[in-house]
Length: 435
Image (cartoon, rainbow, N blue to C red):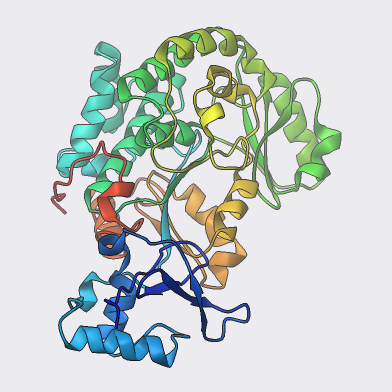
């Protein structure tokens, strides 16, 4: 009898076990039983064998395993040819893959996550790293963030942009420091920029430099804002014009309009007169509209010098609704044009959830993305799950810490791609937080 090898190939939609010399047991087309066919040898035994061997060792073989393969497997476990695998070390057959989500402009609020600063070492270190790169401007932003009565309001560009980015980045680092290894990242607007840093597209230093350059350039653009409307994009075609455009698609009936101040106010009055529900978002700039076109050329020139890299961890782009490919990742025009392009978050979320069971973790303030995701059918039916790491609004330091504790309890250490650290961004510490 040949030496038995049992290896589970951890690929979406597959459940293979290799036995003997280059033989493959795979489900048949109806999913009933397994057929034997020749395959090339696979040397990834140590990292891929855990699930099937664990099932055999505990007396629960994988569904559809043939009797012959089961007898061979049991025999080798019993005679010691295959080491037993402890149940705690197994990979669950239907593990939900982890997707870290980062919210964008509009999610910021006074003292968001401030209860973690000075309490969670990883979070504190990450916030300081971001704001420290801004020098005195970063010090002023930190002071307003932690103050009960800030000098400059949180919705101003010099506060919302650096502080939301800092909190998103710090929450991503904190979650990954628990041993969570995301299978993918997904961001909304500025949240995609945060995801790009954690995925290795930009260094933190380059990202902060680009972010602050955009803030500086925005000062020369006309004032404006964003308006959330309870309607599908096609229902709002008659309200567009005068610089007002669809800035984001957040749900089947959750559309965000964006544009200069006066035209946007006029649209808001028309919507109200027509009995449509709408509300202004916490933004003082017309993000994702042509009004920010003056930002594109200078940003593109800067990004060309920064030289972005392909992502090390998969990153879904809400501008294309697809995984970020190498070509777009390194193309300066792709990143420079984002302030004028619509955010297609809902279509992107649908693609993410169509890939299988997901554990969607919102690593940022306000729970805006968590609320959107909970309305998706894949979450309502229990196929996927949503975890928010912070409260929906400012509720005091203890509420911040309690939310983090509860989120951590729902995220098993080591959750993420098979092979553990290989799927990690490679940039984050593994220190345990204080809470």
